[in-house]
Length: 375
Ligand SMILES: *Cc1c(COP(=O)(O)O)cnc(C)c1O
Image (cartoon, rainbow, N blue to C red; front, side, top):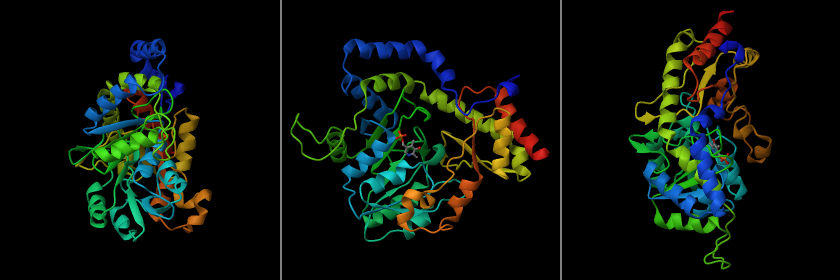
């Protein structure tokens, strides 16, 4: 039955059901107040998330993209600067660099973890390098220590793109508070999702936090006196109220994703041993929060078609690395420049991993994968 009904990649309705009353009460509270911009709900969320993420400052913003943009603006990233990041991530990571007139200097990934290769980062440094942006892709921290060492040696900041990694840990520390600044997204499909767009900037640097707050509201302090050219990067009170309810459940939701990942490891072990799949590795010094469970698959496109026919949702994160995107043609990277990222783009497949999946659904996915390689 479950097989015929299919398994969606993500079903947010399953998560909403049990928290519906609390969320509706929070929304009603904002409606009754008619205070929609920043205010007490946003301030409360910022305090609660700062405690959860073990940072001194958390600043609610309008999206994960705007978190990256305003963090880079606050650090003074400007025209003709260079910013090093992975060629294999969601577009916003490199898009924000380019929007500021700076040059995204792309590096290849570690083929095992999909995260940027620290050795390649060190080799990409030039006198123009103004920041390094490691991405904690799919919910597992990048190899931060060598990246932090490179950054410290050159006196430049590390901006953590933690959009997919809220609650992930590296050597005992929460991501987002390890570099100079951390950027999170509350896009609905992230582990902590709003009812629309939202984001967060985290830092332990009080001066930087103050600049981010200033830039979030058009550089205005007090009203109609502008000290810097910022933007409208504000988080809505409605989103903050929803997120405050959801944040209380995040640890349990993450644990359920981790249980599902462990179950996939058991169920897909034979397919991996037979060389059909590579399962995502979990480094011993990290806590992976499984925003995505991404495997590498032999004949990935054929497998994906087979799963789609059975009603099993999958996604390709990401089919085209930055260096091969039409909008970045002027960066001048040749096809084949980053072989590990290109191989990942051709082989990676995200399987359903959300916490409310039943064991029967996980078995359906694994059974369908086995059936594909058995025929
Ligand atoms: C989702 C995401 C972003 C952007 O977040 P939005 O809230 O969608 O703007 C940035 N970087 C990465 C790695 C992401 O996954």
